[in-house]
Length: 336
Image 1 (tube, helix red, strand yellow):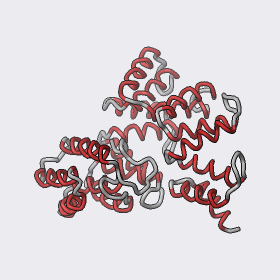
Image 2 (tube, helix red, strand yellow):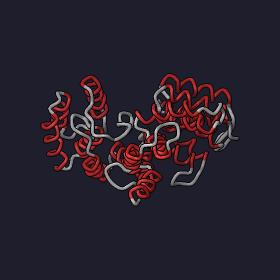
Image 3 (tube, one colour):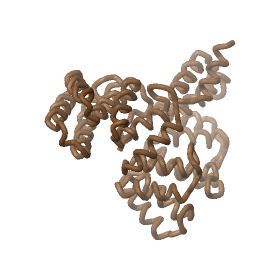
Image 4 (tube, helix red, strand yellow):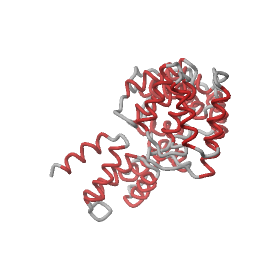
């Protein structure tokens, strides 16, 4: 479950008290059940107790001592503390360091979290090939988030061969862990006959399961397939349906895509006001592409007063979150 609680924008913020406590309790339960937990269990429990009590410095000292003695669980926990800002500001450089140690020791959850950092360019250079390699390794160790991520990469042909059959296998493996997003994509594959024979009954079965387990990312991915015509004819009506479902459930990238649909009049009546509203919603949630789209409007004065200062600030934020297009535009502006 490497990315279940990861910050949407990688900003250095502290969690609220209630969210922090819930997150710690869930992560503690996950780690208590981890393979190899018996090793140094009392020491791990003491460090977890300090973290739960919000004694972050003490927890870090305890975990660091254990990690330096070769305990991969402690190294993984340090990685999570820094990548998710558990009681401390996020520090993805430190997160990479400790997650790498745990991953080198064969820890699947650490591999999966580290893969996300590489894919998002958090804490260092973006490296999608390395991310794919780590996701593949973690998936081979039955990490459900890695299985889902590899399913998406095979589905889209992202840094690996495009293969619906292989995507089906990865989603199927992830769905065994009751990951709703994987169940949602399995439903889509069965409905469209991609990588597997069409089966309306199984499509409905997995769609119902996905609703029970939560499937916002799955809904967004299905919306993208219809928006781009990937594996099925382009269909803006279906794209809007799925993207709107995901957006209403808080998916920032779906919000941005809906904004673009209104801006371009794809499947909906062209409406720049509504496009701007959706961009603003997505930007507040940390979507780098929405930040780019808003920066473009500030730069050109489309739908809002021209403001190069705000445009530069948004391009910079977008670039920091991995948008290469924003980074290139920022360079162009700074050269003038």
